[in-house]
Amino acid sequence: MEYKGLTLDKFQEDAIESIRNNHSVVVSAPTGSGKTLIADYIIDNDLHKGIRVIYTAPIKALSNQKYKDFCADYGELMVGILTGDVVKNSNAPILVMTTEVYRNMAIGRDPLLDTVTYVIFDEIHFLNDIERGYIWEESIIFSKPHVRFLCLSATIPNADEFALWIKSINKHDVDVIRHDERNVPLHKYFYDAQLGICSLEDIRDIADIPDYDRTMRTRQKHARFALPNHIELVKKIRDKLPCFFFTFSRANCQRFAGELAKEKLFPLNTQVSAIIREKLSTVSPEINDLQSTKVLRKVLPFGIGFHHAGLLPVMKELVEELFSKGLIKVLYATETFAVGINMPAKTVCFASLRKFNGVNHTILNSKEYFQIAGRAGRRGIDKEGFVYAMVDRRDFDYNKLKKATGADIDPILSQFKLSTNTVLNLIKRHKDDEIYQILCKNFGTFQKHGMNFDKMEKNVVFNAFNNIKKKLNKLGYIKDGRLTEKGEFSSKIYADEILFGEIFATEFYKDLNEYQILLLLGCICFEQRERTEIYQVYYSEFSEGLMKKVKENEFLKKEKKFNFMKKISAFVDPCYSGKSIFDIIKNSNLLEGDVIRFLRQMSDRLNQLKKATDDERLARLLESCQERVENTMKDIGGL
Image (cartoon, rainbow, N blue to C red; front, side, top):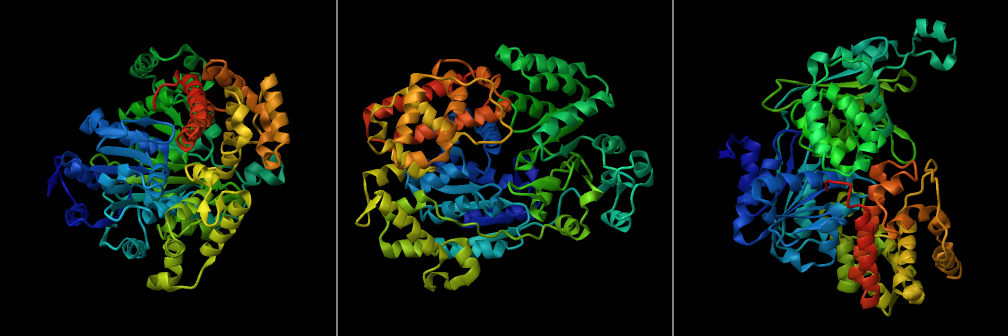
C-alpha cells in the first residue's frame, strides 16, 4: 500500500485496515518505525467528513510540535491546540491537546466530543507514570461510547492485556498490531573511563579493580575510580555524529555544551551565526541578554547545542531548527526531548543511566532506556544506530544495568488513583450502582481480577472513594448524596480543588482585589525548592491584609503554601504592575522556562476558575488577572 509517497510496512497496513473496520488499535512498535503515519491516515480519512479527530500527547513540547506539523500539512484553519494555558481554534476538525485536557473534557462530558471519531494517544505507555498515569486510564474510562482509540507506543510486552481491558470496558473491538523489528539496527555500548568503549561484561570483569594511576595521583579513597568524561566519549565517536547526549540535569546540559565548545572539535559555521541573527532579530532585546541565550550563541556556531525545559520557547525552536537542518553535531538534552519529538540522530549517548525520581537516584527501567535509545538511527539515512552509556563504577550494578538495557521487557501497569475532581464528577453524574461499576473499570482491577473485574467485591479504589466522599461531606461539598454549590464549583477545577473551593466558592473571595487574587494563585501554583533564591520581595497593604485574612480562616491557615506569600510577591508584583517576564527572571535564580511554566500554570488555573464561577464580578476580576499574566509573557516568543 502506498501512502504519502511511501510504501507502508505490513504493520502500518494492518493498523489502517483495523481503522477502516472502526476498531480501536494498540500499536506496539519501536521508536522511529513510522507509527505516526497511522495517525495521519485517520486524520486524512476523517478530515472532510465534518467529524473531529483528537491527538493527545503526554507533554506540552510534543503537543506543540504536532500542532506545527499538522498546521504545515493541513493549514492553520484546520488545526486547533488546547494545552491548558494555550487555546487556539478550539472548534477545528483536528485538535491537538495534552492528555490532561482530554481527560477533563471527557469526565466533564464536553459536547465538543460528540463529533469525535478517534482519539490518538501518543506515547500511551505514560500510563505507567506514577504521578500522572491515572490520567490515561480515566481518559479511556470516561470517553464517549462511539469514540475509538489509536494507542501508540514503543514496545508494550502486555499489549494484549491492555487491549482486552479497553475492549472489556468500552464494548468494542480492539486490535493489537505488533512490529518488533527496528528499521535501523541498534548497537548498544558502554563507556568506562579506563576501558573506553566496551561492553557491560567488560566493565563487570574489572569493576572492583581501582584505577591505580588515579589513586596514586589523588591519594583519596573516594577518587579510586576514574570518572567517565563526556568530551572524551564525543572524541571517540566523531565518525558517528550527529549525536543526542542525554543528561538528566538541565545545568549539565548547558555546562557540558560550554565545555565541549572550548575543545574546538568542529569548525566555526558562519551559516549558523546568520540563522541565529535572523531568528533573534525580531525578539525582545532582553532575550539576547539572558545567560542561556549568550551561551547558545557562543556554542551553536561550533555545531554544539543544548535543549531543556528551562529555555524560552523561541530558543528551543532555534535549536530544533538548526538540528533538523543538520547544523548541530552534538546536542545535550534532557529526557523530555526523547518523548515523541520526531528528530532522530545517528547516535544517542547517556551521561548516566541513573536519575533522580523525586525521592532518590535509581537506574532507568527498560522502557525509559529504550525510549531514549530509540532516537538513534535515522530511517532512510543511517544503516545503523549507536547507543553509548557512560558508567560510573562507584555505583556500578551489573544485574540492574543488564536488565535495563537488555530488552524492553517492562509491562505497563496501572497507576490508578482517585482525585477529588473525579469523585465530585462521579457523584454529580452517576448513581451509586453506576459509580461502583465505573470504579471497577480501572486497569489495575482488570490486571488483578481479569474478566471478572466487574463481579468482584468492593475494592481498595471503592474504599478510597468513600474516604474522599466523607471528607467532602464534612467540608460541605456534598449533602444528602448531591453536590452543593461549593461542590459544583470544585467539580470544574482539576487540581487543588478543595483549596480553590474554600477561596472562591465561599464568602472569602468577596472583598479580594486583583493583586490579592494573583498572590493567592501564585502561592498555590509555585513549586517550592530549597535552592530557589529571590533577590527582592515586595510589600504592600494588599499583601499584609491578605496574610491577615488567611490566618483568620480556619481552613486556609493550615495550608503551608501561604507561608511563602512574601516570596511569591517577587513574581506577582511585576505581573500586577505591568512589567515584563524579564523583570521576574532577573529577580530570582530560576531558569526562564521555569518562570514561564509558573505563569502558564497561573493562567490555566485562572481559566478554570472563570469557567467554574457563576459570579459575574468574580469572572471579570479573573479575566483581568489573566490578561495581566498573559501580558507579562507577551515577549517570550513561540508556543
